[in-house]
Length: 226
Image (cartoon, rainbow, N blue to C red):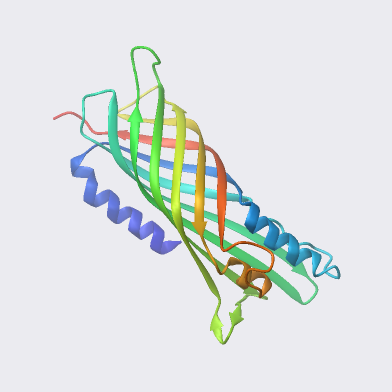
C-alpha cells in the first residue's frame, strides 16, 4: 500500500505542470466475478467442519488519480491510475485464512461536461489495462505452495463509466459525489483456483469476467489560469 501511495505522489509531481485539472477519488467498490465466487464456494463446501465460512471477495475500496489535458472543449482527454483492494477473512479455531486481492488499472479516459445544459454534471469513460495479484495468508503468515510464497497474477482490460456532480467551487477546488460502473470482460488469472483450493481447472476456468460498482467522492483541483 505504501508503494502505491509513493507511486501516486510521483505521478502527481510529474504531470501537474501540464494538466488542466486533477481529480483524486476514494470510494467503496463492489465486485462480482462468477468464476472466483465458484472457487471460494467450492472451498467452503469442501470444509463443512469450519464454523466461519470464507466470505466472497465482493466488498473493497478503490482510490484513483486522474488528470485532464489542457483543452477548452467540452470533451476532454486524460490519464487515470487506479488501485483497488478486496479482502476475504475467516477466523476459525487454530486456522485463520485471509485472501487479499489487489487490482491496478492504468488507462485513458474521455471527460465530458456541458456547463450550459447540465451544470455540475460530468461523465468519464475510462479504458484501462488491468493487472491483479491475489495473496493468501494462513495464521498470519504467507501461504506456501510448492515451497514458495503463493501468488496468483492476472491481466486483462476494463471499461469504466463514471457519473458525477460537482458544484460550489472554491479557490479552484471542490468535492463531488459519483457513481461508477465497470466491466472487465476477460481477466486471465490461471492460478486463482490453485492458491485458494490447491487445484487447477477443476472447478473454474483460467479466466473470469468481472463486474464492479463504485460509490464515492472526488476531490477536484482545477489549475488556475496564468
